[in-house]
Length: 122
Image (cartoon, rainbow, N blue to C red):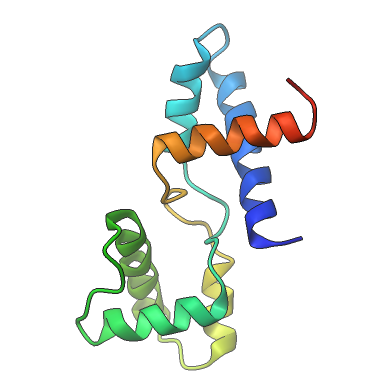
């Protein structure tokens, strides 16, 4: 399964988990709360993580996208705390829970509905 597929699956799971906690709430409210929930992992490849961690650790900006920059800064903090030295260490950090999905609400909402349509659930 690709990272993109995993992310979509986790988005749907986050929405359903939020629905259980907020019965009867409007779907847009549920989606907004779910979009701010923690993600089970980081959805970036090891190569991209290493490249951008290198930039962050040297005091440079990894990207112009504020959400992606926050993602790489969070990864850099975990990297420093864990005192990583090998690619295997970085790969393990990518598998740890992330503080959010690091995507906009609109992207989260579109990914949710697109996934449901693809599975013919709506």
